[in-house]
Image (tube, rainbow, N blue to C red):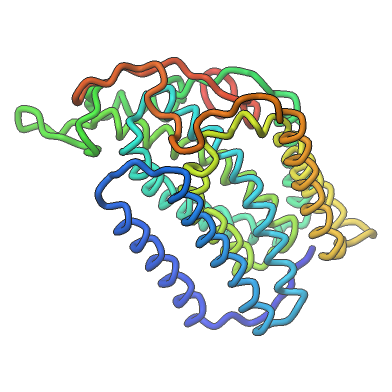
Length: 351
């Protein structure tokens, strides 16, 4: 197992955490007016987040050397690649519930907060299990290989966000209004607090992301069990997820074969994790970084070349009100339409 142990003072953890909180606050302040985010603005913000993520790797290079920096970049790249698959699901959820474009960023902002919290828990639990029980490497490895297989064969299967068991549970536990009321998650009706449809959308996004959190954290743990590197790779990749969505949402159908590349990456991570507990030992980080980079490049290039004659959706406006009619505060959910169905989810939600 690639422990890659090096001392990380408590103040470094605190500084990184504070830095992440500051970046989230800046992002929230920049979009406080709920304006519709166009392609140009999303591309600029995506460039900023990617520059920050890559820049942190340079800080690690100066602080701890090339092996630590390369390991971080390997984790960051695989997490960034997997986050593209999140975009497909976000587009599906927003399309299904016909979420107005102006409110999508708020849902994604709070969704990212939940994603970071879930990943932090999974990182420490997963790393501890791998350190204490060597055989969990075989379980995690087999899980990643199985997930990669399911991702490769589950294309074009339909997903129903409203049938997600967590969403249905929330509807049973909390009184909900089947309408949008501006950007509010809750309203008061006759003195009673009621959840709006936007809150249901947020729950659907969070519930779906739990599946991605398990996959992505396990994939990075296959590269290293150093919790600081796994956390920072996940955090800096997830921070740019909102901008990535608005940047790519109108071009999703051009990524027709990307899921095959992601499936290969998950399977590779699983094999790497299993091999780490065999006489073969851990695979070299340069090899891992090379496989990740080559796989992402080939799958994206393959997709773009194969779909070069297909018209893309407008890159300046993400999908929001697809088939649902929006009139004032009242919106009827639209039928889902997805470029592909990730993670082999069943109709009743994630399993």
